[in-house]
Length: 189
Length: 431
Image (tube, rainbow over all chains, first blue to last red; front, side, top):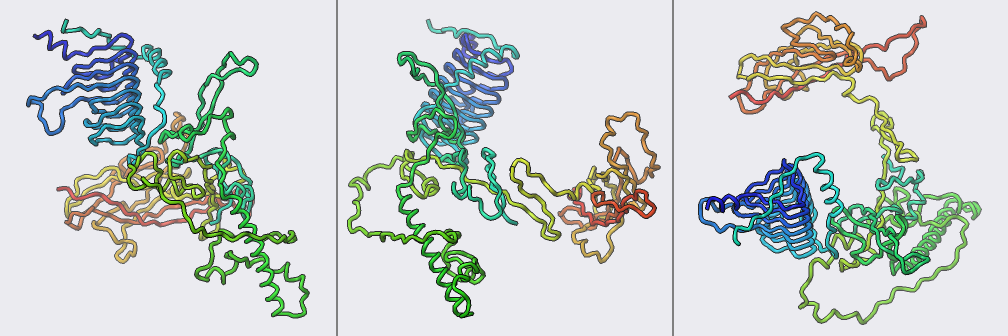
């Protein structure tokens, strides 16, 4: 029983992911291969586990947090909800993401704030400093920009940052220590 | 203040500076030839390149990577591909603005009105001349009066007339000597039948992302596209660089040049670089009617030694409006060393001996001194304690030309004593 609790609270980093030691990862977090987590990024799984897919780019001071909703105290019995993040997403510097479900190829630009009840499908771009805390599913290929959070729809989704990811995976290990990759242990066999 | 040069801040494309109106710019309708505005968010578009495989000219079976350029907005992520504009193979200059379908009709109308304006002007001149002097030859009238133009704000009389037509057509007068062909235009025809609205106009649900906003639509008045897929980028508007003059002395403050990148700021006499600066360094707890010492600093911005005398404001001082405390300033003259830019590198410099009174001068550091003033707050309310005093210092105008003195030696510029009113807000009383 103690083992199970321990494995649940640990951080599982797949092989091929580059996670810097200076990043803060707490709780039950799973990080997929080819994901780069910059130093000073924070991934905090308080109220449930976080599963991050492949090819994501999480930049400095980004905060991905699965926290309790405001009006619920941590003591009461709440079903822990898993936060799922898909592939090829970009979390730029200083953004805050609490969205429970993020699809693929999304870009959350610098200092944007995405609330808990937002569901990002794929190809969405949340512009810099835009705060989206509505309770909705953002349709595909939507761009939210500007101080009034104007919206428009793109015709094509944003390109995955493969070049940037390759570059970072080569350069970051030269300057930072990396967290050890731990294969996700299957507790149910 | 008058506008003189056109300045393309987007690409620093030079434009010839013409006194009256730039002919080049007016041809382009005051828009840059190279840069575009995003039709969606009005920011400047940047050109991006991608590599696309394209068949080689010699061998159609092999493909090679060629660069294709498209326009993209960094802010709202609009790209030229969104409206269906094909990628160009040239980095700049390949982008065409769509043609206005009414362009021909508009230019024909403009020509017709130009001719009409010219003709009416001639008639008016002729009438004026004929009324004044009957013996004047007829040819004279065509060369004399240039001012009055129809649809223009030529003279004061026209300017003050209310309801005068807009000056957009000003400058339309034909050049003297041009052939005056008769231009006729067809009058606009009113149609009886108008296209009916589509049947599902009221029932079809609107897809908001496809509809343009009013602002996007009206920024392109020739087309006013209703659908977002017809928003084409427009050339960027010019910014104008104005020349500014001081109102009092008519000095040029900033003047545009032919090349916008070489425009220099012409203000030389900025007050901050000549008047000693007073700053508050530390304030103790201020109590009502109790004397406390406040530490201020005085910094000397010029390179020669400056003498500063402080004096309390007099009773009937007209500038002394906000003072809420009595202040006792040092009565002795304070001497400030000159600002020496090389002082930090010169270790062998001997510190100048100024013989400061330790009761008045707290410290001295190159061109700065710290000194005490005594403050006695008079009012007990919640507002900030404000003290005022007068500062008198000597000023030498080094920018003015030095006249050689009579014995032939170099005369130092004379010191002028200036007095300033200083007001300091020291914050609220201590609770």
